[in-house]
Length: 219
Image 1 (cartoon, rainbow, N blue to C red):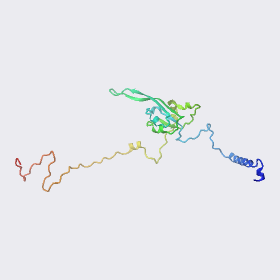
Image 2 (image 1 turned 120 degrees about the vertical axis):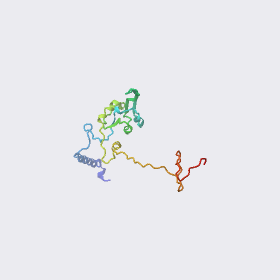
Image 3 (image 1 turned 90 degrees about the vertical axis):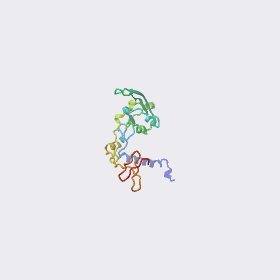
Image 4 (image 1 turned 90 degrees about the horizontal axis):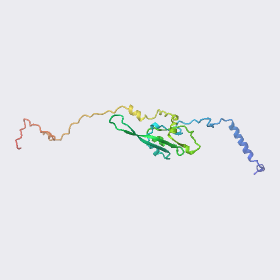
């Protein structure tokens, strides 16, 4: 080790100068930091922010609550009798949604509940500003889940090279042609030459011709 390196502060001075040079170089470059919340971020269209509820479409089938791996969906409902609309008709029963809540402190945003919903009652919203000071306030009821429905973006258009939707293809596809085949005659049994085939069951034998004598009674 040289004598200059043994002096106190000789090792730290080059490092400080190198750091100041790096700072000077980056001062003139534009920054890429978004000053949130003053500048809102540009989110992709398929962002998973919060789950919105369309209450009119929910039938309380409990499919989303059963498939949720975190068990963070709570649904309560009751049955309501609908009177018959026509004379002599039967009364019907339907499920009325009393409670639909999602505990976002347990939710892991997997999207299984949205995928399995058969009536499109759950949708992804890009809204993510719903933090709370108390973790117990992250249990959102159906009223608050319904407030996010206006923020749900419309579905994106299909790719021009994608397959045609099954619902559209079923309505535009031409009907199937029914092939008609000619009626085939009944099969006949091979007989020796010069003899008539035996009559089919249930049919009377043909009358004898003039060249053939009529059978005698008892024969």
